[in-house]
Length: 251
Ligand code: NDP
Ligand code: 8X3
View 1 (cartoon, protein in one colour):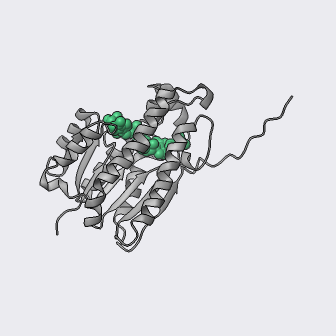
View 2 (cartoon, protein in one colour; view 1 turned 90 degrees about the vertical axis):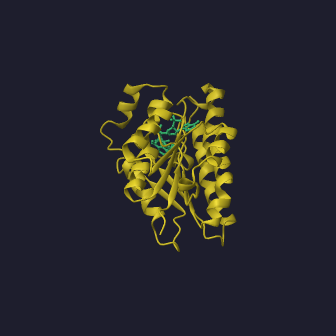
View 3 (tube, rainbow, N blue to C red; view 1 turned 180 degrees about the vertical axis):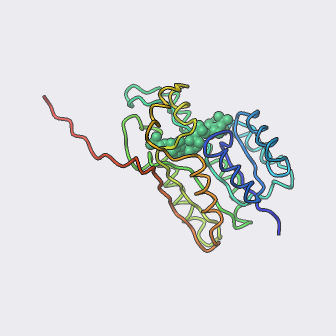
C-alpha cells in the first residue's frame, strides 16, 4: 500500500509545523507550504526529502500557488488530505480604529486563499476519496472586542466547511472544521506586530493549547475509519470559557 500524502498550509510554525512532524511520524508523505522558505528547508533537512516536500509561496499569490502545486513531483502529487491551516489575525483594535489594510490581508489569507487552494485540489481529493481539515477558530463563534474581521473570517471558514460537506455528499470526501481556542504559537506575535511581551503575558499562567495538541487532533480526525466524519471540533484550554454579554448604560 502506498503512503498517503497530506498538504499542510502554514507549515513554517505553530499548528502547521507540529502537524508536519505528526504526519511524518505516522508514515505519511507531507507537502509543507509557507512563505518562509528557510524554515521549510529546515523541516526537509530534519525529516528527510523523501518524506517532506517544501513549497514556498505566498498563499495570496494565486499564480504562485497554482505553479507550485502543478510542479509537485510524482511522489507528492496525489494529495489525500488538505489541511487548510495558514492564517493570521492582525491587530486587536476595535473596528472603528482598525487598519483597513490589515482587514484586507486577513480576508485575502484566511478566506480567499483558503477557498482558492481548496478549489484547486478538489478534483484530486474527490478522485482519491480524500479529506479536508480547515483550521477555523472559536473567534468565528464567540465575539470578543477586537475580533472584528478575524472572527468574521473564521465564521466564514466554519460555514464554508459545513457547506463543502453538503456539496461533497456522496463523494466519500470528509470535511472537518477545527475550532481551537487560545493556543500558544507565533499567532499573538504576528497579531501584535512582534510584541513578545504581549504574547508572553497573554499565555502566562493559562496553560494554553499547544501546537502538538492540535496536530494530534488533526491526526485523529485523519485516521478515523473512513465511514466517520467529524463535522466540527471545538477545543479550548480548561482555563478558557465564554464570558457573556455586555450592557452599555447612558450616564
Ligand atoms: P502561527 O503564526 O504560528 O502560524 C501561521 C502560519 O500561517 C505560518 O506558517 C505562516 O507562514 C502561515 N501564513 C500566514 N500568512 C501566510 C501567507 N500569506 N502565505 C502563506 N502562509 C501564510 O499561528 P498558528 O499556528 O496559531 O495559526 C495557524 C492557524 O490556526 C491560523 O489559521 C490561525 O488563525 C488558527 N488559529 C490559531 C489559534 C491560536 O490561538 N494560536 C486558535 C485558533 C485558530 P509564513 O509566515 O512563513 O508564510
Ligand atoms: C485564535 C483564538 O480567541 O485568540 O483564533 O481569537 S482567539
